[in-house]
Image 1 (cartoon, rainbow, N blue to C red):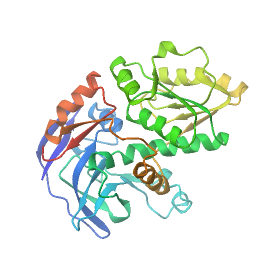
Image 2 (image 1 turned 90 degrees about the vertical axis):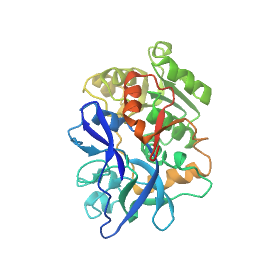
Image 3 (image 1 turned 90 degrees about the horizontal axis):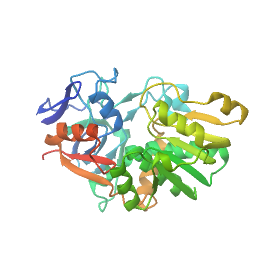
Length: 323
């Protein structure tokens, strides 16, 4: 089969790779569409020791099983037996695996092997390019849910970052009942794209000194975005940190203490979250799901370069094997 293989920092090669072989309890899926995630970009830049080269990246896939089922893929593979798994918190299983991390190859390929229990069927009228958004949207659905749960709901929210996770977070917050959602994005081209989508997108300079938001969701994860989050959350509010950027600074811990601000990390999703997300996609609660740009898998290296350069307006590039 053909695959897009990460071969070293800022290097991807479209080449032949071994066909996958399904083991017990596994299914081979023909990938129709697969999205580029921020974590794929971290690996591409050589910033992720968990993803050593050479490796097939990609974990936001959708396609068809050998017996004809139309599926989207939950790439998180928990052990199923630990305390967290038994409690339904598979996302924090200490022994979890993820497609696109050794020992499992990813979905930037024509075919991939997936555990049967990780396949979620999608209806015939859902295009695969939209079905491939289930994984990043599940990340956002989970983050919005746990943040709102702390407060018993929330009326005002700020999302820091207008990439796919930022857009998904805004959509998930709105779908779950948050009335006002603002997205702060520094890239003007991206900001204009978000505004055309109907989102309230603003530049960092447009934020006041303290916006008094109930929930702030950091979808980037750098010192500067954590500083923005600290400044914009209201007393008694919640910061949900999703981004896996870099650094450890930017948090105003004194303010958190004096004003009882909750800071919480959010990682991936539970199996329940993933299925809830697909249901929300199918019934339209997460919008039109058309904020993507399609490119051939063979063009993957150029796609990564363009994301790196900040010239991609759409929040998500989705790659198409066979092109």
